[in-house]
Length: 460
Image 1 (tube, rainbow, N blue to C red):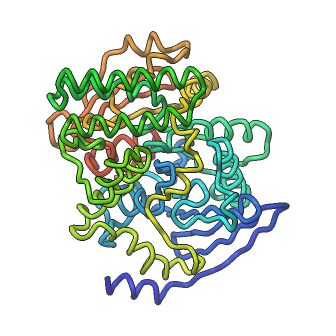
Image 2: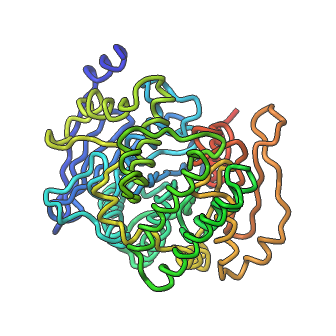
Image 3: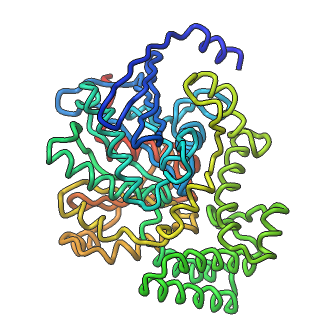
């Protein structure tokens, strides 16, 4: 920690301010890092943080890529967990990460939607109420950052998402593609990458019961209860009762938790930990509150397992030394890893699918990569394979007929995963990983990044 403080003291900051009709961007530069706010709407501010890779390789036919990382939730902070917990240059101990994705690309983190992490609104009525509103904000941010930076424009942008972030990544890919075509956005779209993403909630809720029954975490009674609620969710979605479907999703999660003796939704080989607040909410039947608590507390426990300390260490880090480093976070903005307010405002959006928009991306020729951790339950591989089979993409039959290629990592010849590809669709099955693939299988995840970005290798 002392070395990190010394780094802050000796750093030099430069501020530039861009003004537009309704957009302003406050930008700080410190060596190979930049961060700032974009006012995407009056009184609505998105925070971003860009790392330029020290491993950058200049190659005439393979430009160095940029990864935009979108966290899930909705309302989970990419600046915090994605950056310090998964793929950024420093881990939660502020020590260099061996498998940082900076080895293959520059990294751009955004706390999205507004109200998440360091992003904030000056009026609670300004939270995004739909995924589309959040996408409009993200497109505004990309326009402000890329249109004002000729260096960024040279690198292909890969939109990489985890969990609910996929429901932002897919429409953002479409929005960016159209804006590029119209000449209003100056960037190169490299592709969209969906990691354990919540693309088709219906397919996931129908996967939970059968998967857990095969794993002996549910018996026939538990399976029957799970399938009954899943069928109700299907009917609600067909009737356009999206709030009710989200209520039923929370009820299903808690029924499965009770029938399985608290299986962990983010790694089904483990048990989840429940505290008194969660148990009290379950007893009162507050299903949605419990489900939101479960995700937030999993992020906290995942962070604490990496740090080997208390659950609130990520929040403490971002409200302490990191906030001091960044200098521009308003005093009244308190960082939390998961914003309940953001989730609540997108409550009716939560169960809506994005399969048709994946089809649109593929039809436009955009490269789409899907990866799935074997041990994930919430976005189980079984559910991911189910929604992939619903694609109307012309290349689907050929894709399904392809043989898988086994994947290894380094000199280790144990099978780490499988890969299949046809035209602009790629799929990675990642063995031994749960919902958070970069932390569970960091070596294979990094090699996968090099493949889908076509990142140029260092010269020997």
